[in-house]
Image (cartoon, rainbow, N blue to C red; front, side):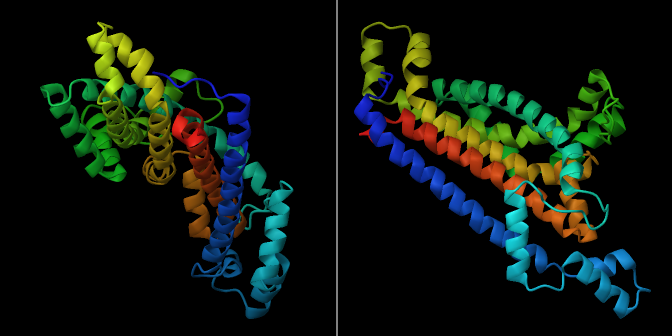
Length: 326
């Protein structure tokens, strides 16, 4: 049966657990910021040299490095960068010579739109596939869905994107191979441009999410309360909707969060292949041009989003699992 809502004393026990998860996530985010700063500093090449070109003199390069603050020790640069970031100032782009926040603000809505459409489609498909597979365990439907999801898990994003371009853009001429989206683009053209990137990301996310959803629902279907309800004559559909799913919500939310986190890595590949003007392709361009403030800010956004998804999954698991609340 579905777990009863926590009592006042149970809520008092839950608060330290949730606070501990939040503190752990903040500490992890701080450690991630250190890794991002160090890793970006170790990239080969020099930002000043990239901007001035090979014909620049050492004096010109040294002057530009001083202007950018690149001649300061690493720990001092990290403290200045992190302090400014906490105050909402990610710095100025080395290449575009404009605030990083303005550059990100132009690209972030495109990435959010891509992620939102992919998540909406993926969640609906994954829940349907996972529940159908768990209910029909051992049957033909289960076998077919398992083969399909295993095949999709084994195929990398770039191959799915390439095959989609060959099929829908080159052969059938249905969809554009380059996803150009501007503020002036209408909704119909925007959805048409997003079709192939969404398809490429959805295939991978759905496969992961559906398999984990199947495992969570199948585990609940093997519990004694399900057998008892069936012996009492409760319709199987009612058992699944009102008893199995509420008890499986914790693992299912975990599956969703883990699967949606794959959007972070998949977006890097898909946005680059389709030349989609999102945050992931912006970060790839920042790596190429050695634009450290832009690169570090984009990486922090991706890592913070991933940690937020994991934090939500942990909190939902605590609230949904009566054993964790005991």
